Image (cartoon, rainbow, N blue to C red; front, side):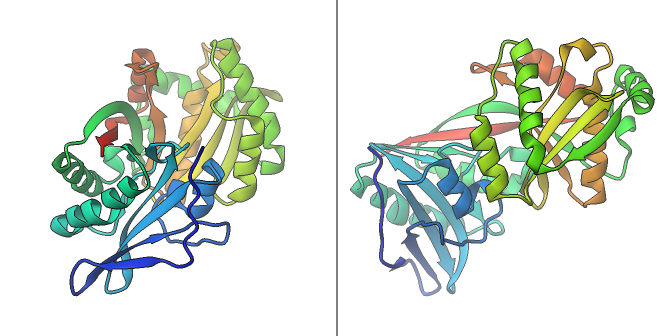
Length: 323
C-alpha cells in the first residue's frame, strides 16, 4: 500500500546561514516552478495520486533545487510513471550543500518513512549536461549504482533539416514533400490519432504504453503542453505523432509512427522535418526523439534511423541507491 503524506505546512531545517531545506506535501492545489513538465505537481499527481513527498532546497528563501519521490512500500521512485523525473537544480549548484541536503534532508527522511531503496531516472544528458554532471557526482558520492539507456535528441539549429540527414533520406524527403500533407490535429480529436498509432504499433507486434484514457487525461490536464499531428496522402493517414512540450527547451516525440504500407515512402522523415521546422519557429532548441531500447537492449535499427535524421546519441541514466 502506498504511503500518503499529509503535512500541515512545509517543515524547514537549517543547513547554513543562507541555505535551508524543507519537505512539502502535494495536493491538487500545489504549485511549483519546475524545469520539466514531469516534475510539476499536477503531472506528479497524474502519475499516481498518493504517496508523494517533495524535497526543496532553498537559498535565501528561494527554491534552488528540488526532487519529488513517490513512496510505495519500501521503494521511493522519481518519477513513478513518466519519461524521467529526478533532481532539478538552478545553475550548477553548490556540491557540498547538495550532498549535505541529500544526506540530512532526503535520505534520513526517506529512511524514517521505511524506504529501503530509491530510484532516480534523469533527463537525457545532452539536454542539460551541467545538471547531469552535478547529479552524477552526487549520486556516485553516495555509492548509487546506475543503468544507462541510449537516447536520441535532435539539435534544432538554423541549418535546414534536409542538410542534417543522410542522402537516401534526403531523396525520400524531397518526394514526400509533394506527396504528403502535414497538419495539426485538435486535442478534441486525439482519440483518432491514438487509435492510428495503436494500429501502427500492432502491425509491429507492440503496444502503446498508455491507454487512451490516460492520454486523454494528459491532454485535459496539460492542453498547452500536448500536440497532435498527422501526415496524410490523398486523405489517407500515413503517419502521426503525439508531442509533449516537456520543457521550454525541449519537445518530446512521445508517440510517432507510420503504417507499414508506407514503409517505402518513409513518411516519418517528412513528419520529423515538419516538427523540426515548427520547433525552430518557436525557438525550441531540442527535439527529443526518445530512447532506442527494446527489453533492456539497444534497438540498433531504430537507433540507426534516428542517426540518419541527424539526431545525436546520448544517455538517459537511472540511479538506484540502497538506504
